[in-house]
Length: 319
Image (tube, rainbow, N blue to C red; front, side):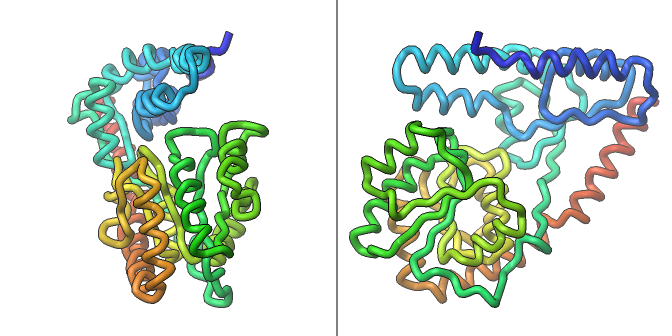
């Protein structure tokens, strides 16, 4: 019927599965389901909330086309009622950014003292510069789930269409795949970008790193990010970055990217053009950005933070 009951049914199955098992702790990755409330009564529970899915719901409704699509989105996101009831009852919540912490508190009414911020890590040993590869002069890369409004791909495509007249050899590589004959494919045809835009999917981390090395500019045009992996991965690869100044993104970039307003194709156009015109200036910024990622988003540091939280959650439960 167009709903998404899997989160609730997963929680029910997990509750049954764990009822006769003696684990030291349980970590749930964002099902935020009724079953977790029962599990929390018998075992130490940590709930991972990347961000409140109410943000996805907001943007999906905002960019829905027609009443039928709006009703379909409302039906799909009906699980949010459950998550809002459950979230405020969970005692230990982990989220990867301060912005997500604030949004979880605001949208899901989770007490601030129950939310621990532990960033995600970036594997900078895999996502790294490849000095033997010379980037394409006017090559741009973005990572986006095409046809998902939250990623803001439309605005990047409009920017590329404008840049095409000044840089005829410009090309955009999208890490992701469009829905066949969906909105993104129709927009590419409308903007006459069939020769400039290519999609690549099912790539390994090493292959994605190779794509970053091949590109002169990385663009993240997201309207919202609980934690922007593409931002961190581009920076770890020392690829000059243009990114929207929204949600968690400034927490990740610091001062090592061009931050622009969301939903602004003109700003993306200017950001890319700045890098095309002054590549060395922005390459220096990008190299400093890699050092920033290594220092602040390494898995060893983050692993220790999770280890400390696990011990604390277990000890608090015993008390």
